[in-house]
Image (spheres, rainbow, N blue to C red):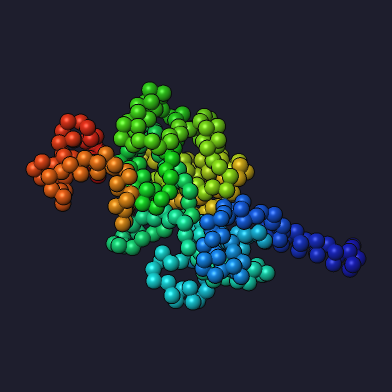
Length: 344
């Protein structure tokens, strides 16, 4: 039997160990720069008179409950009643990637007082809600557009993702996964087809199983830059995130033998700082890709079509049936890819 003094010491040590596990912010050494803080964010804070607040970055969201990270560590958080009351739409609530001002940072549970203006917003048309925008993630520098080459590869879908990126001022990168499940000739044809329709976008072909191609993609990831993963369910986004991070962050599952489709596991967005210093946000797979308010995005994605449209006889030409439509003529002569035109 241990004495009372020894017992008290034992329980005190156990409590400390418990709090270290449950509340990792008590042992945090991360800086704001490690989370992507830069001079642009600093200027936005100053311009909006927010210098007197502690700030952090939203790294996860679970039905309006958030996990926020800053120099002190990770905290559970919720928004103030005032922020909830004054929000005009879901767009005004915090999203993963947001920089936010915080109250009550000396406790285990903090309050989000405001959202610092966003540098970039990856968004799409909210599913089933006409005219409403759904924020995918914010303050993104690059987006990995992930597609598997072994099953439902679709260039039309890639063009829709490109439109979202361009309208959000986010630089796109195409990542082709599961290259171990196809032959080199088919992979070569897929890459060539992409290059014919989509110009000047980096393309990485990788295998999550063999790690083939990982050296190139890891060398592309820059410290303190934020990357977002976009793609359908089952294309290997979570496995890619786990492999890039060097640890199992996201749950993954096998391909269904009956449907040859991936079982979707990721149910929320989460921001992770990689050992390389890059910052990566995973996303649930998107069954629908709704594009909203994206004129600039369309012009960049289908720049060849917009170039020919300037030669049309009518300024309000719809490029469907009009006389002297330069776009239709270019489609007939092969100067504009017919499939790209149909997608447009």
